[in-house]
Image (cartoon, rainbow, N blue to C red; front, side, top):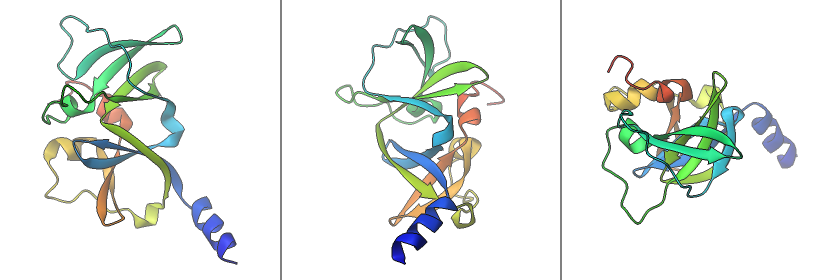
Amino acid sequence: MQTQSIQSSIADADLFLTLTVAGQTCGVPVLVVRDVLGPQTITRIPLAPPEVAGSLNLRGRIVTAIDLRRRLNLAPRPAEQQPMSIVVEMAGELYSMLADGVGEVVPLRSEDSAPNPPTLDPLWREVSRGVHRRDGQLLIVLDVERVLTIGGGR
């Protein structure tokens, strides 16, 4: 019986890939994730906005790399820490969101979500679809489209 209830609760939930940025746990819908990559060679793009770390090559396709730390105006990643790449597709283009780490795929039920708290930093609020309490921590659900909107209205 317990297995059936666990399967039922997973079926009623959306699946999210967890990631960390400067110690904050975040989640992105697995349906938008194309690949998860370890450290990659990133080529700088001259005159690109600061959030754009550069580009990388994914099986012959050029992927624009967005550094989530820079996008959220956070302290730079320590030099010895290599970012992980979460590759997503938006409007037919591939983008890599650079995070400090990638966790697991977890089910999150929409009825367990909460709106952004008023104390959440405005940059985080701009890219968040809401929050979930999970294991005593706040998980911020990222709106991938908003994360990838660079320089829009800021």
